[in-house]
Length: 150
Image (cartoon, rainbow, N blue to C red; front, side):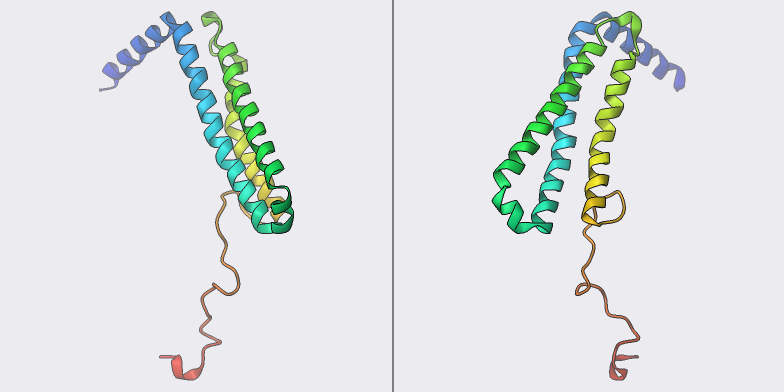
């Protein structure tokens, strides 16, 4: 079972290396798309967080905030795609350190921005979760009247 998969992987790798010029355009395009999606979702979450925690300020500067977010997302995604394209220019030097660093940066950037945003907003944890307010919490059994206890 493993040998046929290994043979297919080696042949696929050889095919990619023979046609690296075409594949590097596709891979750079996918890196651009990935950067747009990951950074765009992070920017959308940060804008939503800003609108919830500072509504008057966000309403006043909404156009500027959205414009800055779009510009930052587009520049980081384009930079990631371009640097990925540059990193794959020489098939004799693959895996290229530039491509590896760019890929790691493109993966870690949304997590780092989300983590920093949550810390600045006073929320805990890494994964954005809507935390219940005090009104939405379930009532405790201690505070319930005696008639409701069973």
